[in-house]
Length: 324
Image (cartoon, rainbow, N blue to C red; front, side):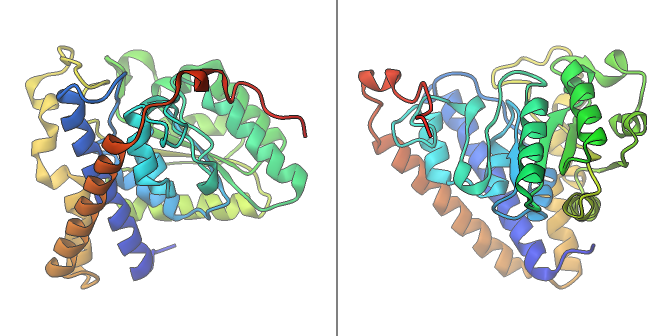
């Protein structure tokens, strides 16, 4: 399905929000103002925004340790996200989750996860829940190429297949499992090729092309809502930064470390150029949208800085769910 003008502009706005949120996070972390670890998804904005543009608010996503972009794309509150990164009580998880464990159930964001491959069982459970309750909700499980070697990937895909669960397995293949090239840990070139082993459709697309991602994802979502079961969609993206902020990336060449300098491969620049070429956007509209996004990010930073830290006794709260 080709996205409408309204959908294209919504995708662009989310891509800008991801780009500037993470750019600001890089600055704040470099200045020592954010605690813990930070893993950025710069370079993968098109995949996150286009995937979530195919979903409803009541659909679910499961994210990874690199989950800022997924959360923003699904509609998570920017101020709550920034406060969470600062470890403040006003954060989406009351400052207890940090960068790698952001969740926002109000928009169907069931949580990021710092354990590679841990999202598959959660996604299958969410898919089973939707099927059991008789809804047409779908669940998207984001993961990387390295996670597709874990047993949870194979177990999850197998179970979702035999039960025809409405789960879309969304691989963001950036070619690196932390510091190991994909060719050094997998024989297959495309992770999507593994779908055939479980009797489900598999598609591999250019994750830097927002429209290509939207079209592939739309088909997978339609299939899931009709009760036809899971799909495996692979988006090939580029990781602009290291595995984590501060990673010296000695395992990559200088050219690979500076891939972000090539504007022709920048997903945001590519999408902007496409929309301008199709007369769906003017340069002035883009500038205004970007200015508004930047203002929202700065408002989120101020909110986080001015928010209080959690009280010490709050460490013992939220450990158990109340009895129904």
